[in-house]
Image 1: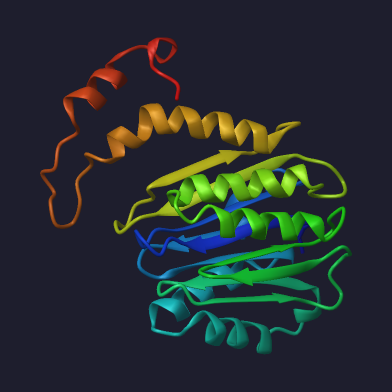
Image 2 (image 1 turned 30 degrees about the vertical axis):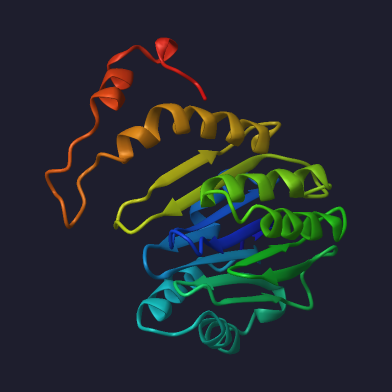
Amino acid sequence: MLKLSTFSIAARCPRSGMLGIAVSTAVPAVGDVCAFVAPKTGAVATQSWVNPYFGIDGLAMLRDGASATQTLNRLINADGGKALRQLGIVDHKGGVAAFTGEDCTEWCGHEIGDSFTVQGNMLTGPETISEMARSARETTDLDLPERLMRALEAGQAAGGDMRGKQSAYMRVFDTEEYPYLSLSVDDNPDPVTELRRIFKVAQAQFLPFVAGMPTREDPMRATSDEATAILMKAPADRPVK
């Protein structure tokens, strides 16, 4: 089993319905085995002695109509290794649930709030989680990607993973079946800072393009002339927010 000593946030935006996860750890390439998100369904963060099938099966349960709490209970009750697991879930209605197994490495714990849950293990202390939760509570006026980014920054500033820093990841869905945003820093000495840098580039260059991509309801939707003009330039000549 892969041990992901990790801090993460899973959240839903009450205004837009966007769903997403942001996570960082001192293990390379954290994203695809920890963060599972699906539009109009929910988000599942699985960590500690990570079981990726919590993410796969959890999304299937949410898709079938189970709440975050029902999904968590079904996953944990069927798992013989639950004492080593950590899990955070938010459903498409904003319901949240979290679990920290009794054998997760200290410091470990979680905190749930209105449409979000933060969780972590092998941390420098409880302040990592409390600061992430504070950030999530105080930024409800912001779009979900910015809220996730700020929560991750707050957790890192408060201490983060006790072993150090290596990777960070953010994944957000709007209403379409493709991601609104998916950013990964797989191996970097300061991954949260690097994730912020890439996020700024994406805000200036990529998200205007996404705003014009086809949707199920409007397959002929076109990218704006402004967004097209940005992407026609060489990367070095494009704006950075």
